[in-house]
Every structure is written in C-alpha cells, then in structure tokens.
Image (cartoon, helix red, strand yellow):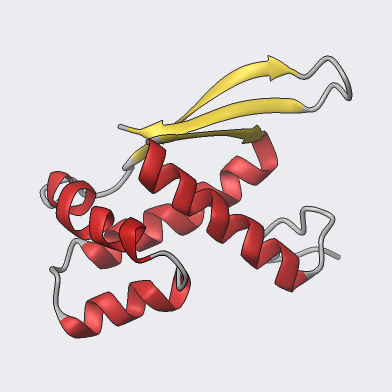
Length: 118
C-alpha cells in the first residue's frame, strides 16, 4: 500500500533529486520562471513555497541559515529571495507561484509545465 507518500521519486536517487530540485529553485529565483515536466514542477513548487514562507519572517541570521540549508550554493539567489521576492508576499497567506500547463513534448509526450511567480 502507498499510504501517506507525499513526494514523487522522479526516477532518481535521493541525492541527485535533491540537487536537481535545488538547481531548479535557483533558476526560478534568478530568472522568474522554470519550464520542465509537470511532476518535477510540482516538487519544485513544494520546496519553493516552503522557502518563501520561511524567508517572509525577515532577514535575520537564523532565518537566513534555515533557507541556506535548503539552497546552499548560490548566495546571489538567497540575496534576491530576501530582498525582492519575500517582501512582496508578506501579506499573502500562501500560493506564491502558479503552474501553467504547456501541453506535451513531441519527443517523449511528457507533460510540460511552466512555474512562475504570482
């Protein structure tokens, strides 16, 4: 039985999945959007929503370290998250991103989606 399994495996080992999701979060923060498969976008969205919720508390040392533990290797993305993105969503209770379905890829018919900020 598959009760209470909330995350998708994405056909990767956990360490590879973690690094792929981190890189896509950094791309979302720096460029404002990410285009990928729908399953991967859903996982990126979960982590991104969590990061923005943590970052909304303010730019204190403890909060910055909590976010840096999830996205450790890009300081420019962290700075942009704390200075530009998180202040926009302080009064918003959740739902900081939107998923736009783009149809299917021609090569492998995978469902493709775009993740962007609201």
